Image 1 (cartoon, rainbow, N blue to C red):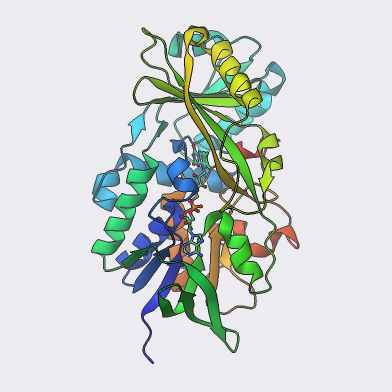
Image 2 (spheres, rainbow, N blue to C red; image 1 turned 60 degrees about the vertical axis):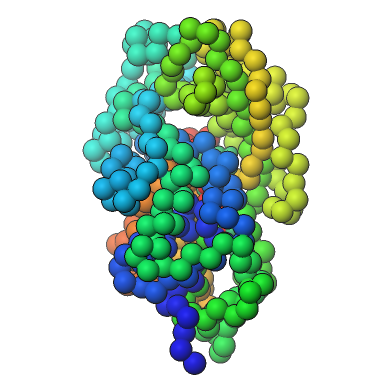
Length: 391
Ligand SMILES: Cc1cc2nc3c(=O)[nH]c(=O)nc-3n(C[C@H](O)[C@H](O)[C@H](O)COP(=O)(O)OP(=O)(O)OC[C@H]3O[C@@H](n4cnc5c(N)ncnc54)[C@H](O)[C@@H]3O)c2cc1C
């Protein structure tokens, strides 16, 4: 029987579509299967912030390569992602200034445009902002954010232009193997055959793997997002994050401010079933996020709430993704565990996954950092902060 595809990608989030795009443009026959619609999972609820503040050389390089794609999306992908450059300030407590400076040096060494700024300089860059209690910040002028739905749909269309089949409303019900080799997947619309299958199914990846007897240490956890209306006269601000409020704030269209969390506590609010969880933000969180916004931007004391939601992070023990072949299952790959920060890395992730599937893994490849067995054998990926989302 001839195969329908060389590779099946399960999941139409940003990393699924970017992987499908890279595979298709390199000549592979790709089928992407998405149970709802493109960006219908966590990707569609992402804040889609593209900042480069990482404390690991490999992720720092990945984010710089990815930023260049977001900035030149039309040239590279042939469609829009609506990248809006705002700049980013990542502020720390006085006692963390030295380690922040070390981290900035690491980022500069890979070519990231970032520098240390003291509280006075922070205020020159962001005049509306109150730096109370902070020791300084990393300033990235090139940072910004994308439209996550548009970005994912653009990648999907580009993959299609390169010959990929993008099938939405198709649920994978079982991954099929014969004699330990992947042969395809069963879906609500019938069997699709392929020699390789990549699970890029976000929080659903764990149950898909457990059906095959494979345990992945990853939890799905609720992350809260709150939108506040900026008062008249407060027209613009950059992307902000600090370790005192443990919040981030980014401008949103329509005169809004989007507020999210960088607290490691987000990992504690786990859900069992990604198809059925409480997507409402509780009153205490609403109040805390509004207070943080008003502390950092006093003009926001006059703001009011417009909307809010929770969506799911897929969190691994070290808050880094797993991108690897699945041990003992020939032809099966996984790319998941974005842990609240893998929208921005999607261009690099797509390239790395395509290379892994088409050319295999070599000892010096960056992708080795994200191996499946690191939690049991090699040890977690190092990062400088307890706030692992900034890893
Ligand atoms: C609230 C929030 C804010 C965030 N903010 C940022 C940010 O500012 N910057 C940043 O870089 N990252 C951010 N992230 C993280 C980032 O959005 C995610 O890491 C990324 O979107 C994950 O994309 P993905 O393609 O790996 O998976 P997902 O978006 O989880 O997509 C998985 C897809 O698989 C599909 N699927 C599942 N099961 C099946 C099945 N059986 N058959 C077929 N399809 C299936 C689902 O429907 C889903 O569409 C945020 C995440 C959240 C939740």
